[in-house]
Length: 350
Ligand code: SF4
Image 1 (cartoon, rainbow, N blue to C red):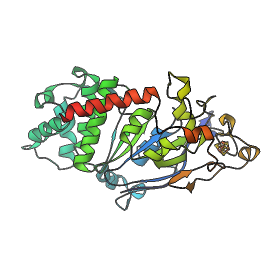
Image 2: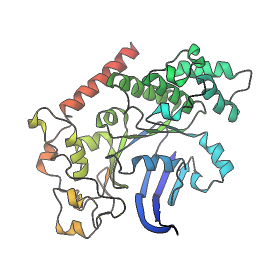
Image 3: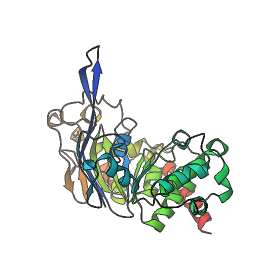
């Protein structure tokens, strides 16, 4: 359904009266992936690694510097403004902070009616019942329609954000850290709502998150991003059971583990993310990589297939013994979060 080839977004930094180019921030470089109908691809990585830039570039909320994005065979990157507006009906986005993305001066009814009327999905006569139906689908009540965003809790506001995204019957939704700002129990409800909607409508998700428990619960496949490039991509089960890239192993290890004996995926990632203005030569991860060799400092590893994983590491076949022995079993913290998510799901099903 969604094809992304060589997506690149670089920002020019301009300074001085003459606005000369002082540098180029390489936020996203040569990112390629696909998402099938009803599939969830999670995009994970540290803050500032380019995850959100990828999400916004897919919808052309940020204009890509290069590359191609296609939805159902139509090249989104080549559309003119008019055609892009029509295409946006099929591609929606949910933000981390629904308070920031909802107009505080509009009632929920007005917020949801706007896309319905704009895209001809309802008339003045049918819009009220269409809004009520959307609210019910997203776990709210029709009488919520008359309320303003500030009158809702965080979880309810996110449900309104989801209802707005759902209004245009999209094929794809980019979920940009949709539960990061919520309490754990509310996170579970929202994640399960997203899963249920996917089951019902066959929506594809690009699920941007740094929370591995949520990703593990939600994703069919996972793409790990480091300094604007995909360094590993694999089915979720494979990635958590046998992470091949040292950075992926570090991310999994970074999830808090009360019992040090369970720390089997190697050390949490150390040091800071280098500046995207001047990425390190060779493998961009080499200054922080516990496995770095001389070759890594000069030769950038290409993304290549190893088994059912795509990975960019010269030594992807050499998975350390401790990482090989490492789970399937998630850390205690991940296990606890997964239990909460499952419990909430069972409760809703019951
Ligand atoms: Fe580490 Fe070298 Fe692999 Fe980069 S290529 S992740 S520096 S081992």
